[in-house]
Every structure is written in C-alpha cells, then in structure tokens.
Image (cartoon, rainbow, N blue to C red; front, side, top):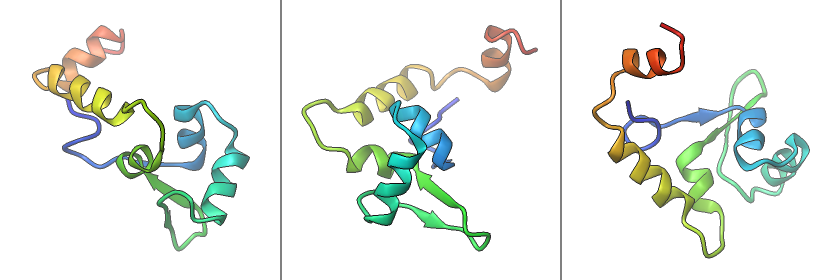
Length: 89
C-alpha cells in the first residue's frame, strides 16, 4: 500500500500541522505567505499536497527520501494486511 509516491495525498491544514508537529496557525501563515504549495477549495478550505509540502522544506534531512523508501519497502502490503496489523480487520 503506497501512501506518497503512487497516490498524491492532499492534507488538511490540521493533518499537515500534525505531520510536521507544528501548529495549524503556522501552516496557515505559510499558506498566506505562499511559502508552501496549497490548493484552495471552492468552500474556502485548503489542501496541501503532501509530496510538494515535504519537497518545499529546506534543511539537510531528506524526509521525502525516507518516505519513498518506506513506500518501496511496503509496496507489497495490501490494505487488508495493514488493517489487520492495526487490529482494524
């Protein structure tokens, strides 16, 4: 089950904040400053493409590469196997 590479993930502001362990207000400030990629829905809410968000971060750690590696290692897992491992079968 791939989560980032094969299927683009559109995150809510709260999900992007949780992923980066920052406040929702920080994500909203980044959107207002156009520091991160985002989509504005007709309802006025935002969605942030996960891959583009990670690619927009700067530093010496490549989180995107780590997530791609996890996708590759878990590519053979089915949704049913993941749900069973989580106890949600």
